[in-house]
Length: 391
Image (tube, rainbow, N blue to C red; front, side, top):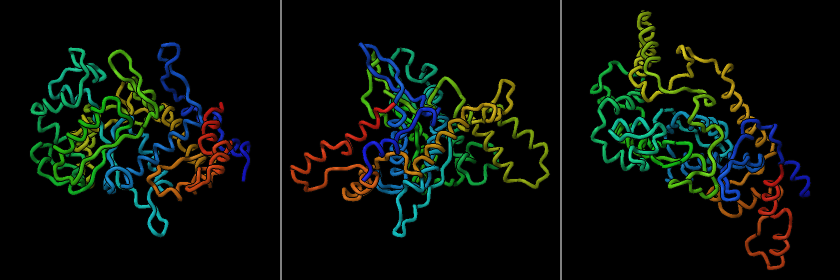
């Protein structure tokens, strides 16, 4: 068995290894004030692994519904990096069949549904963040649902059009709403990166149930679990932490921009004039993007409407490199990982923990044995606490 010092060396990382993830902060109370503090990098990377494993377990059906999903929809912009983590770690964390082969990862897509414009579409005036109404009250999903009669068929058609195989043949709301979709009879999971008020995900689920009523199931899930109790700021409760890439004040860092109807309409009309009849499916997709541009993210654009090269933008590639380093560190056994308990019974959970060099209390342990393990620096809780305290 390795010593405590050897294990701590194995699982300890520096902030320099993960320059983006190392920027992670959380809100804490200090001397009666709420301040942002950096999170220890060892604690932070364990957090990202655990939340990724948890979400994969929802997608493959081991947690939550108990049945795997056929299609996962990630809400742009901030849930897009979540999809990168799921794709990276799927084979490691997904359920295995009897031969030990991971179950197939379901298809996924992206859609841009933000709460603020959708509140306004149904006549609820909110601030730019979509959190407060004109009267200062918190805007909730109930406000959206109570005014749903103000939603137009076009709003729903724009969502549905994105899931018509091959794209749309004509820009007609009625035509779009009559076409079959790839989500019909499918179990669909919509993923948001974090729950602040819960309204965004609830609105998205409601919209999909209206836009694609033949889907078998439309469920929702979140990626980020702050792991700490919310803090009260004024009349609101604030999350103690958010994913490091979550920043509503900027478009950069997630490889995608905001919806831009002008950009997609220009692209469609440009290529339409060059059509020689040899690429009909491509033009149908371009037409779909132009039609659905209010819910389909455009690339990152500069002030002149030109696409920004991600090598120039920089932030997205830095995040991707950090996520890849996270994956590589896990693959080489250099991140201590606590799996979801529901993956398996206690014996298998115990084996996975002890195989990483630390101890849990065995079932049926004597009082003397329990006392010895609880005092050991290699007892699970003692070891993880020490690991999280190393700067």
